[in-house]
Image 1 (spheres, rainbow, N blue to C red):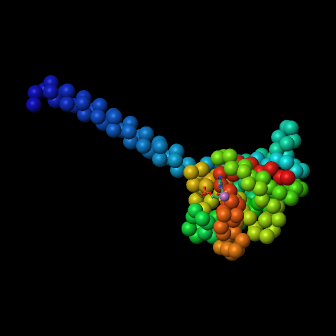
Image 2 (tube, rainbow, N blue to C red):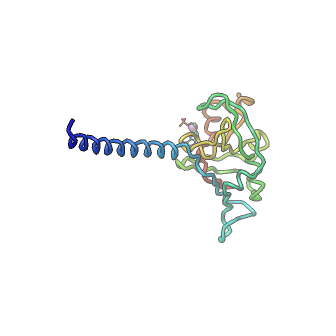
Image 3 (cartoon, rainbow, N blue to C red):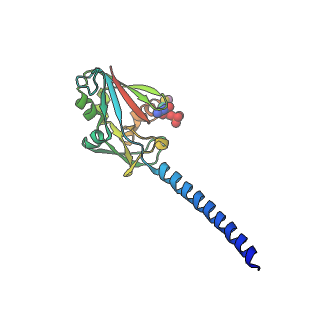
Length: 178
Ligand SMILES: Nc1nc2c(c(=O)[nH]1)N[C@H]1C(S)=C(S)[C@@H](COP(=O)(O)O)O[C@H]1N2
Ligand SMILES: [Mo]
């Protein structure tokens, strides 16, 4: 090999190495972004006695506030997940925090699904607003950031089938108390 061709090969290798490093860095960054749990937040409006905004319409929970509520667990199968342990605050504690005085809760999601449940489900089933499944925070692509969980395995007659499934609302962003 002559001196000049070694120099050309060397700089080609350097360009390849730089390209490879860039591709690896982008792949690592992509994997990191994907594994990041979605930040938690929740807006509650409607028949509520306490609010956090200037116009007194909305109680906006921050991630810190949601994580500060007592943590409850429900272990159950759902139509979409094998038997798993879900954790998060009781819906009842969220409603208590905002001073909710209605009888229904209309749930709104990031994918614009809307479903209304009776407040009485809180007492009957101990419904939780889960942010974790088996100790891992729910990603938006995996029912997160917040997933309404009922103890389906404990009430198979009432909570399985199409009418039960519709209560398992994921990607929750807001609650309207009616
Ligand atoms: N965020 C969100 N949650 C949801 C839904 C939805 O479209 N978006 N569909 C609900 C309804 S009506 C049913 S029956 C079940 C079933 O949803 P799937 O058929 O899309 O799996 O999820 C419930 N939870
Ligand atoms: Mo449904």
